[in-house]
Length: 366
Image (cartoon, rainbow, N blue to C red; front, side, top):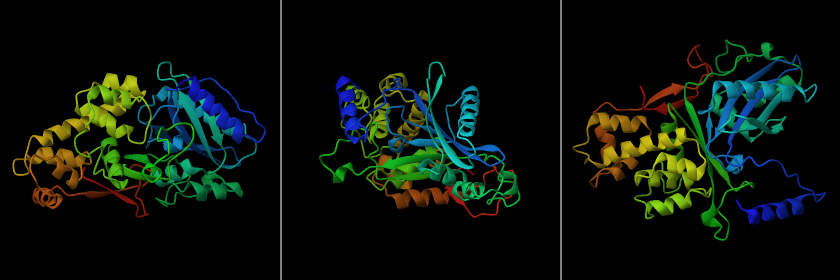
């Protein structure tokens, strides 16, 4: 980000503004970005439905950022501060009943928080939070708007608990935006303040690593898992320079850099992404290197089981192994070893109560 970038952003803003004015505020580039989804009724009862964390730091439009729910790197102190601030902001809107989305920036060094925006409506983020938690945000928000209170409505998933219960998640959701830069050859693929994605995919897993791998497969491009296009043609120094700029494929190039031995610290300094996420990707690299040491015949069952638990697809494993095997052959080997997927329920209560709605996700963690 440079003076030229600022001038360009100002020119775009002034051109788009009906009153030819823009608001210049304190820079929060590199801060972590979080979102909270809330519901409020006419009796001033408020519940937090979901916390969402952006993989990319501030500077990338939230619609162009990989997002994770629930938040992975948020301390309890910071969460309680965000929670209280969001509730106060919602109450300051006046006599308002319905759904609300509040976005925050958090300084990773001092945990200072700044409220970025509040959307007193059902938004794109609300749709993601609703699908992620199983909590019907739009339906409940509509009933709250016509006068119902939260304690008068039932949880549609369990059908035995109240809508006043905040969802508890025992799984991880990852959303990855989908871009079509390949169809628009002249388009600038650098991500910034304007949203450029044309869609998104969402995946559910028992861990971040499993969910991110499943989401990558769902993108319907050449990826068969996180970053597996084959071996990177770039050198480590080139990759470090490349990932300094947010682009659609940055997460794939981060994985390439880790495979080449670039340290987690160097990647964190280059990208501003929280080190927890980089360590998770490093775990996937460790498993990939363990797979690459074997052929299908010599592959230990415990290594195969660990790979499947972390979201490696059969096609991905087949490409990594040191022989010309196929995805079908990998499937037959794991099936013979009893490594098969199980289905777990999205129930809003982490299995505390019996759920009635058939909403499941697959995983290899028994």
